[in-house]
Amino acid sequence: MRRIDLSIPSERLIGFTIPRNQGFLVCDHDEVWEVVIGVSVSVEPTSHAPYEIAARSDFVGWGREDSAPILTTGGSTISYEFDPRADVLHLHYATGETRNTIEFPILSGDWFAASFSEEGDLVVLAEPYHLDLYQIDP
Image (cartoon, rainbow, N blue to C red; front, top):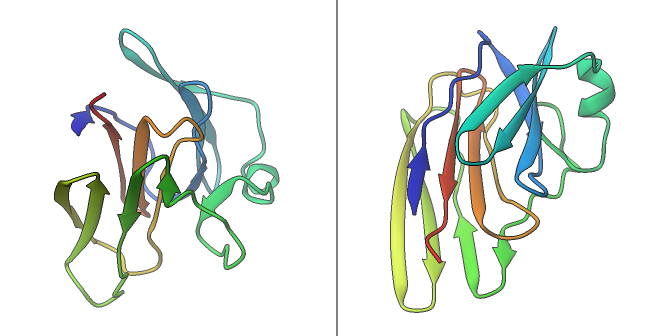
């Protein structure tokens, strides 16, 4: 796994859509950004309404008890246990014989979400104050 540098210009995120075709949306209470992963990564504001995006079936994050992140794809899995009182969340990634752990700082405790992309080549981890993006090595 390789971490992709990404900066979302928000003070408090509410979640993201499951990545598809090298892109996804990230929301806070006021704005929505489109993230596109290509040779470089772009983060551009959109005209979408945040709560309309948050109502979509592919949205994971704040207030979504019914969300369905992708935790297994192909031969790979991600797993975690979110403890809102913890300072760090340990996300476990497994594919074949390879096992890795990502330590993700928890600053809020309000919510945490993680998902593979639909294609299984990206992993997004998010909480209110930051979002990390990883590309899975082929």
